[in-house]
Length: 219
Image (cartoon, rainbow, N blue to C red; front, side, top):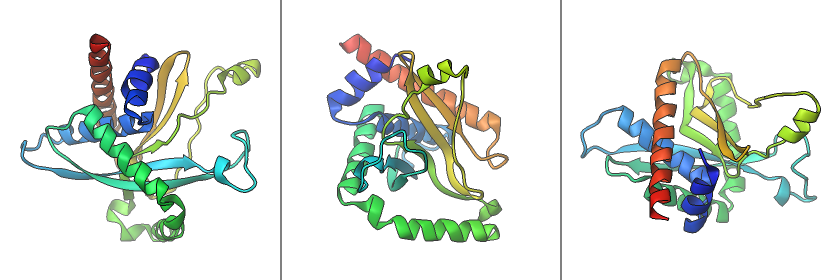
């Protein structure tokens, strides 16, 4: 997928980030997979991960090893009439407002406490698995270190972190690689089947491609 269409024409022209478009595609795909009546609305949560290195004191570089992410959770009511860019605007506005209110810091202790309790007591959650959100995304694409890795002889790689029993239904690790949008999607198994998640991801891709094609025809 050509990232210029989605990031420049789609996101930057609207003052939003790529994470909002990815989240919106996930919400629309999840809703459509249920084949609900058109009048019925569903509530879904999105977790957006924020790299806090640049706002720490002292400031840390992106190369500093460690997990320095905080998170903001937003919920959205989804209907059958949702359009990608309108929903992406809503997703990003909700996230930006929460971030401007420092929710990624003020809610950190409460979220950590709840997640630790869920991990310590897995039987308290359905099927020993608590889903914190439908989808988690990164505020900014993961930096592409492919040139460095090629020098080391590494052809491809993937890195992610998970907590047993707690997390989203699908986590999206996105980067811009070789001029295209490259996403790695992680999901909990056997809670969700590969067939189920592949169908969701394929639908997300179709939604994004259709939206990009529409932008291309309008430009």
